Every structure is written in C-alpha cells, then in structure tokens.
Amino acid sequence: MRLASLFLVVAAMLTASMVRAEEVSLPVGFDRWVYPFSATPGIRATGSVFGSILEPGFDDRDAQLVLGFDVAALQESSQPIESLTVLLTMADVEGVIYDPTSDALATYLDEATDTDAGRPVELYGVAVRNGLEGLALSIRSGDYFYETSSFSNRPGQFENTRSVFVSDYANGEARDISNNVRRSFEVQPWAVGQLDDVAAGTVVSANSTFEFASDLSQANVRNYVNAAIDTGLVPGHIISAQCCSGRSGCLSVILLRCRWYQFGRHGDARNCVGQCVCQVTLTPTLAYG
Image 1 (cartoon, rainbow, N blue to C red):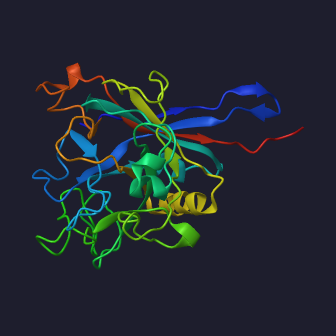
Image 2: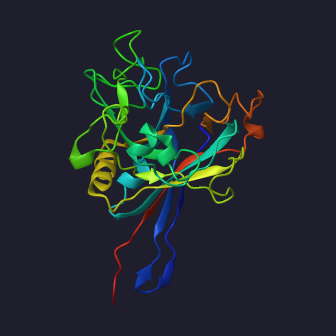
C-alpha cells in the first residue's frame, strides 16, 4: 500500500464568472533509494540522502532518492500548472542541521566560506543513461529503469556509473550533477527543502515535513514537468551533499512508505504518521460574462 493517495479538490464556484484553482495530490508511484550498497532497492521504507565529497570511487552526491508521481489526474485536465510542491516527512535524524538555502560550489571546496550551518536538501530532475529510455512504474516494452533495477550496468564501479541520476537540465540538457564539486561547476536547485517548525541552523526533528516548492519560473523546470506529464509519471530527485563519514549529523532519513518501518521500530500502517506526496495547483482559465 502506498502512503500517499490520490485526491482531488473540485473547483468551487465563486461567482458566475470565476472559479477557484484545483489542487491535486498525486500518489507516489515510484520510490527508489539510489545508493550503491542498497541491499533492498525499491522496497525500502526509508531513504537517506548524503554526500561523499571528493571521495575517490564515489559520487560527490552519493546517496540519492528518486520519487515518481502518477499524473493520470493531470492528463485529464487542460488547465495550466500554477505550482508543484513535494512534501517529505523525516523518519529519523541524527543531529542533522537545517539549512534552508542553497550553498555555492566554493563552500564545498572550503567549508570556512559557508556562512550558515548545515547543508540543504534539494529537489532536481531525473535522467537516465546506460541505454535506458526512462523510468517506468510497471514492466513495459523497451529498456526502462524500475524500482528494483540495478544501480548501474558496471558492478563494483560506483563513480559516474549510476543508471538513473540527478540533473538540473541546465540549458535543456540532461547533465549529471552528481559530481559537480570535483568537476567544478555550479548547479541551480529546482527547490530547497523548507521547514516551518525548525529554525535555520538548528537540529531537524523527526516528524518534520520538508516542503519543496518547485520554481516553475525556470524554463528548464517547467519544460521538464510538462514533458513528464505527457509520459504519465513526474519523477523528482531528492539529494543533499551533507558529508557522511560515520559521524552524527550526516543522514537525512526520509519516510517513503507506511509499511514495515516506523521511526526505527517495525510496525504497520496504523502507526504511520509520515507522508510523501506531491501537491499540484491548477490555474483555471477565467470566464467572463
């Protein structure tokens, strides 16, 4: 059973000539922790995001999280998208410091230049390689990446080999930003996770829900979302470059599914309090008369 479910708030009539926007909550159709040493790909209850900055043999943005949302409800509407927001609840934390702002490349090369504590959790687009055509919810003809697919087609090689990778689609190109630090180029997040119950620079609480409001003013983001709707699945990539070396404070653990896991304890769906959902607001065309 997926944690998020589809619901539609039907537009209400304000006057004879105006209607409210529709808000659609998209169900999670695909969730995958993209990490070389994941022994249970596609069936985990949680996914952590962290970095291995400049660590030989691994990507700078080492543990990544891919989410896909079923957009069947959007395909039935001709209304333009006004906003797209992803909500993710923290399942567990180990002293993670909340940083609500993106960090420049220079701060990863010299942490002394970082003027605020912590590292952000960011949302980007998804791309594939190694001969794959895209992501898929169920088996279909062609070569696709599924929740249970292998990390890459080169076993034992983890740097720059992952079949599904994070991209900001700068200039419309699906470039891999997993190693932007060692390759020395800036990236532009599509959204930075925001919390309304934790102050910047303080420790994130379990149960806190990150809100990622996609910047649809960026042409690359808007084009990606519109193209994804045509395919029936909007995939998003959640990453953070927090350094992980066994120290407390390196893991952002995000609740993906209701079953099997509840804050470190086995449980069932009745104990689940987290969420993973994508909220989309559709702007109606106003009618005058």
